[in-house]
Image (tube, rainbow, N blue to C red; front, side, top):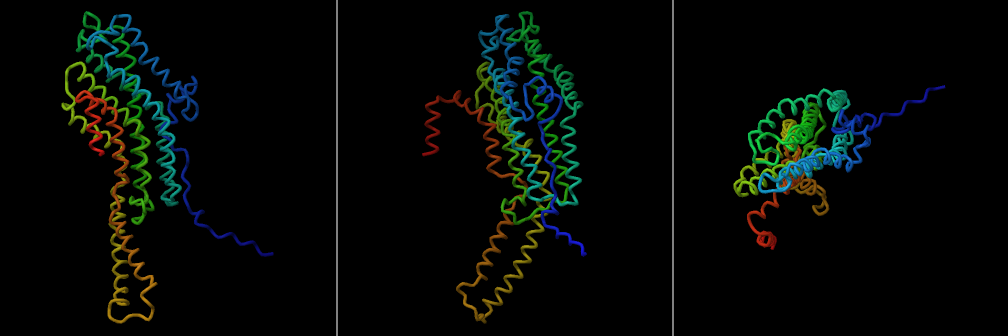
Length: 401
């Protein structure tokens, strides 16, 4: 009896299936601790509990201690409630940093999975891709990493913060009449600010993991194509990472807006005085979040150069045959009307034009602009310190109509 022949291999059988475990936020000692105390579930739900807990730890004690020492209300920097910067830090920035975890979890993981969906990783490169994923997960789960972050905050950052607020003297709500730190000031310096700094550093550490993962993937021999319609060689989906990180951009905008607001309301500064600082800060925030995508630029530039050369050779061959057939004086027997030759020439021209327009960075301009707008939105209300709301509205309507 003859053996049944094995089925022929299908294209699907040769594709690399990437592991589905990549995630920047579902891991680490803090995440596990939040799960144990039921401030989070397995997929970062229960965010309202985490936000309430953070406000009770970081902000509420400052309210109580400031009230006990008579610094809750008052004039200038003697009033805790008039200190716009601190209200924004603990009531807006901290919740945004926590909500960002859920958004990054939902949006970034499918982006990484696109390497599998689009079969961009050849089977021969699969072990290296898996190693990059495994490394990111291992570092994300590292207890040592979070201990180091805490050591930076309480070792280096605390010394700077403590000396900074002592140098401010007795002028602020955080100080006692003798110029030292009051109970509210001690809670601010030893609890509230360090925990906020830890949350920020933790996000910067995650951004480092994301950048390192992208760098390792950029070294692979990815199957990219100059004629891909996303005009990024097939990597256009990576631009969506900026959308995932947009809440963090807003959080940085709120921090910057709080700093400017304090100087305007408490020290008499004017918003135009900060125009270059605002531009520089927006450019810097865009760079640290979009910059990791630039690791693919050398590879995309190579794909574009090679593709244009091949398109040029193909186009040269085609137009010569077209010229010989239709323009050299001897017409073929087939009718010109209905011939596919002219349409093929037009299609080839469109394909070449698409290759010329290919970007060497997987970043869409509209996404980058929206990311910058997200940073600037919290600063926009400060325009009311320059002109009345009616005048501002009139100017905005004039721009539209």
